Length: 312
Image 1 (cartoon, rainbow, N blue to C red):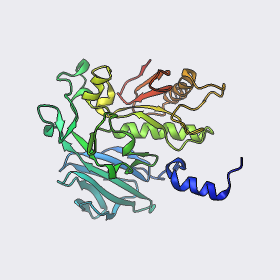
Image 2: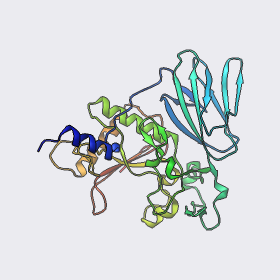
Image 3: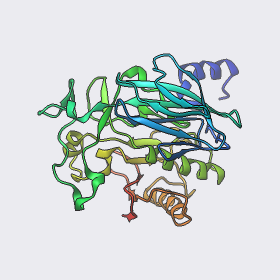
């Protein structure tokens, strides 16, 4: 049966989230935010209140405006804006920055995090159960220190872009509970996911975004599902992902085109990512893990930014 234009329009109005495309835009000149090169027209960083964010670009930076809800706490020199001070009030603070030479703009979404010390002795922030982080570092690595703070998100925040093709609503812990929720999310992970997404699209795969099956996990939730104590998910530096585009059905696509969806599709995606790593496409090395289907989920791939190579 053919779908009439009227029926198609009705379906699109009911399911707008099903229609999306990959945002391929890149800045000609990256903006350095605390030394991190941002090449995207929209990005998010997460800092403690009072933190000074160093800004620079080859053409110089100027503040176009601070969007509603943002405090324009900034320090500038004769050459332009070179610093932002994260406001005292926790939450999103949005700044539109422009490269003085190219005119390119960056929408920088800065989140003033809720300090870790606000986590009570029972492991709660408000009514949200976070649990307790390990008291000792794994292998004495500082990447296993407790996070400095947490991003507090409401239901209205879910659509907030943290990079061109990912929203903050894709990353909260999957535990049950109402909003507000709290999470940790590393900028390096978003850059890595964006680079993988770009490489896949440039290789001919039309993918708007990954399905993030698991992003941040609270220590409480991580323990409840029996995962390892030092999972990188607890520090916001890992994501379990799969491609769900054709058809959009909640499962991995048939990436190797053998007519079935199984672990071999996760292997295909992992091999693609590992090939990028061998070509030094990532400044932050990390883990890649392959997982098949079970009664709870289909195949997926784990990606993280732990800082050293790991494969399983």
